[in-house]
Image 1: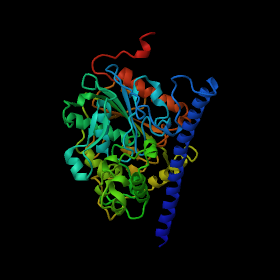
Image 2: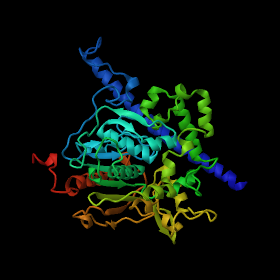
Image 3: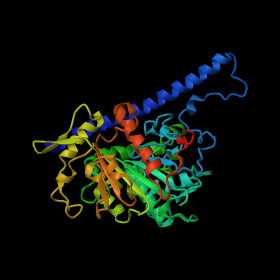
Image 4: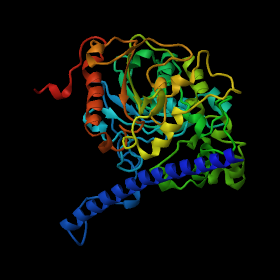
Length: 473
């Protein structure tokens, strides 16, 4: 009984912290948009108090959270050279155009003229996000695949990109990918799909990807999923009372209400499940809530893919390709104290993550449950950044370890060799380099400058590309 009460208290604290953080991010975005809209309106009034300038558009505050392409303007379209850098967000993340002017990558996209920040489903499965990423770049209607769609019970086709953001994409005009958290695994699944020619009407290959940089990437799963509610026995089902159940209920109600302006502002990405009240009615809501239908019933959402078992299932069919460059930044916020793994600091960890860092340090696999893989040891999974275990972020290692090399100094990886996972372990929590750049300070610029410089100067197949900013010097 005491243990049950303790679990409820822990759930209450965790849910409150997450809710407050979500409200903080959302309110920050809204406040920034209203401020920008008010400033724009003020400029118009200063020019002519009684009417806007001739031909000038009126500012619609209600539409402040929509991107230019959602308001009917042409999307950003990049042509062949040099290869664009595509920043792929993680779980609960968002791309350009969501949450108004807020940047998931804290403005890192402004460091290069050829950067794309796609908006993918924030809670949809790795598979669905990989399919969306392809059509975002290449153009066309998102095709989730006939077999997958039937098995999971959702529509086969999704959003239409009338013009891709990089329609020239092919093996001669490849791209650089930078994936944060689950975004890294999304890119790996997409890369395998390209190699398998899994997109009808497109003659794809593994050479469409020039490099992949994993930033705190979920390459081998995380024990955090079990704390949040995934059952350790199968890595697919949820406990009856847990943080993820609260999340599930909130997402279902959010998508069922289907408030257009709110979903334009932030979308979990389940539109292809057609959970709107306009489609399913009240009886459909009941079926969703009790778990008879929807993504949580079929397991076609992100959390099962982030368990150790789910990651092993994905990794069993994902390869490291010989012509692609790989670099990984593994983050940790722990240290050893008298032989015990503990958080490395109190003030240096985001308040939302401190308790999570401590919990993950103490994770012990239940003796009643089978080990997730041969050779598993709890102590290997103690170091973490509050969301992912450091061992999971270095390189793909389960069920088969891929070629890898630890980088202590940047000179250790020059020249870069393709087909090898170079990795560096850095002191940081899971969200230090996203959303709020002020937290990271100078580290933010050092990290992203290093990533972009590597893409532009050290990852190439034939000869070093011409960097636009250097041509005029």
